[in-house]
Length: 113
Length: 114
Image (cartoon, rainbow over all chains, first blue to last red; front, side, top):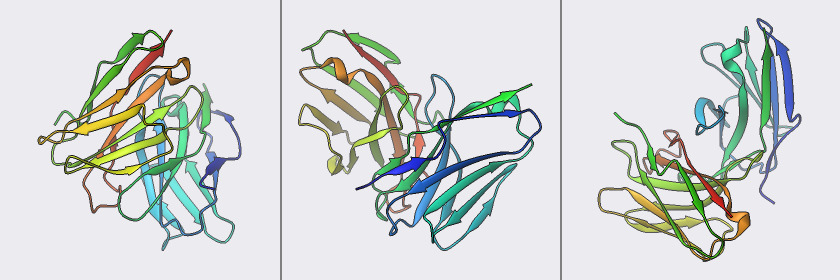
């Protein structure tokens, strides 16, 4: 069935350390993936995306890695800050026509000062 | 640019009642998608509207219906509310043809059914 899952529901890191959040997806035909950050009481906020023809993409302090062989996605946050504390979701484009996004359950990142 | 705006922000309804939630898309966007997010879960796709028509639908009962207006704004209607409908309802807007690469979410409407 359609599903995008996360390996760990919670992650606690020390401020300044690097964070790695993992995600598994089930649809090998998926061609587009997005990471969202959701703070309490707010809607999901776009962080970074990657297409299936890439295996790595970097943004400001964030890097997304895609391993299509094992259908695995990860989000790396460098020098994690208290403001990074939130729930992080990976999402998979349900089709290539701009239709539904399929979200995982989320990983809660907690940054200790 | 106000981004995606949703109203109301919070709502309390009684079981069996009907509710209407509203969404204004980001300027320049023509497609609106609705998601339901239960506590501790990821958003679940309800449906998507484009050119005032339901373009795609997720696994939700007919009690969930929607509408899109000529100005691209949208409404989500839920009839015969159940306790299990309590959730955060999110609206996302995008431009069809960009493959969700420009999808932006609103802050959501927190619906509580009692």
